[in-house]
Amino acid sequence: MLDKSEIEEIFERLKQENPNPTSELVAHNAFTFVLAVLLSAQTTDKMVNKVTKELFAIADTPEKILNLGIDRLQEYIHPLGFFNNKAKNVMMLSKVLIEKYSSQIPTTRDELEQLPGIGRKSANVIANRLFGADTIAVDTHVLRVSRRLGLTVKTDPLGVEGDLLTEVPAQYHKNASDWLVLHGRYICTAKKPKCHECCLFDLCKMVNG
Image (cartoon, rainbow, N blue to C red; front, side):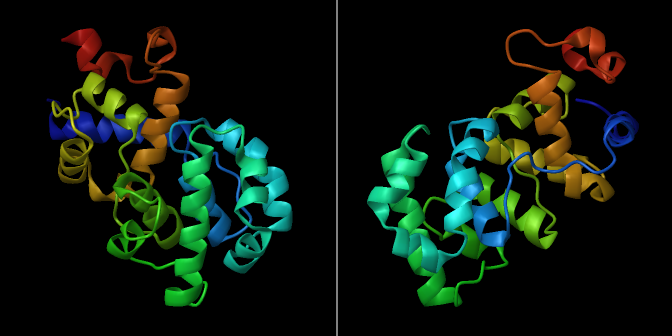
């Protein structure tokens, strides 16, 4: 495991490289961001943005999604993996938002986790990005990069999340997940990490033991 000064140095370098990281998912409002996060499970942000460009142009509220109907929704999101199940969740989520939350997005992670198709990782992303909650979402990129760097030795997302919230200084929590996701997506890739391009090379436990 890294010590406190090394961890702070990691996130300070990531901050210098990208001071204001943002999600690569394209959304028009809070509702469409939630849908984009839901649809992004087990597929790429690029593919989600491709299918939602046309979808969000005609349906950017829960009411419009319900009016669209599940058959037409499936036509829009067909290129995505598990599109049938995702379509069902989108329809149920829209219905819940209308009936329980007056078409607004609930602000707490616990409430978000109760929405159809929204698990803990997605709830963390939404709570952090939309409402500034002190959360760190752990996807496959975050888990891989965190273990390689030495930020954690845990292998499960919940364990990694706990270690990051404990060990990473609080001032970096807001952007920690986005920094680690982007680093894992473009530099610390799964099969062929670009160590020669990495700003964290000298701090990485995978490289330096």
